[in-house]
Length: 182
Length: 86
Image (cartoon, each protein chain N blue to C red):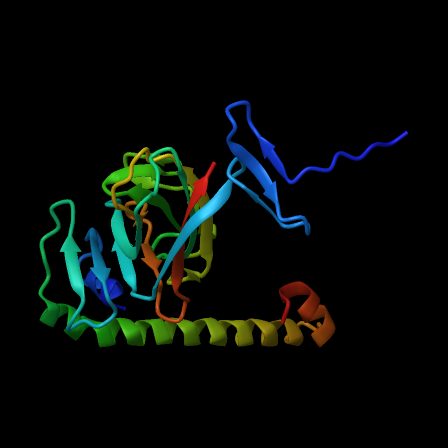
């Protein structure tokens, strides 16, 4: 035996609308997650780094949350190349910052830098280049309604070569910020 | 090419270069690295560029000579392709 419950609106015990239907299958909801605003930015400026100092890639975007309880979903598509000079390997890393705070730094590291990204060709040296994109997502809880600036940084592992963002001919990078009601 | 020229002058340099034009790029020198003038870097860039071209040509020549040596040993093209992929 089946049954059908027909309603136009669902409310919580306090009388607040949770879900409303227009009668034609189109519903609106204040109770479920939704995207409130989207900001994106792209850069093609080449930034090359040697050594283990994290350096701005020029990939940056700003957003002002509507509510401090909302979250910011950050989507990064980072053009990232590693090349080696005289060693047989090249390593490096990336990280994401909110203003001046590092909020996502996924690569393992030691005193010489990050080494989560890279390659090694045993027994060979030379100016080989690894071309590619590094993609990552991060759900941030900034607890703020101030303007927030998100940016990426890269660095190389000391003595192993060069990390380059947006290397000439290697494509641009994009960052997307989405304020979500989580 | 800019940062390659810097490393050609100082192989242990730690720096970052923002921009691909030597005249307008911004160079930050890190970890106590002694700055190198843009004029010196600019002078080194053609040298590095030529070295890269030479390295590419050397790789092409070595591949060709290696392939020829395999042919001289009696391998046919299919056997060579199976071995080295070209």
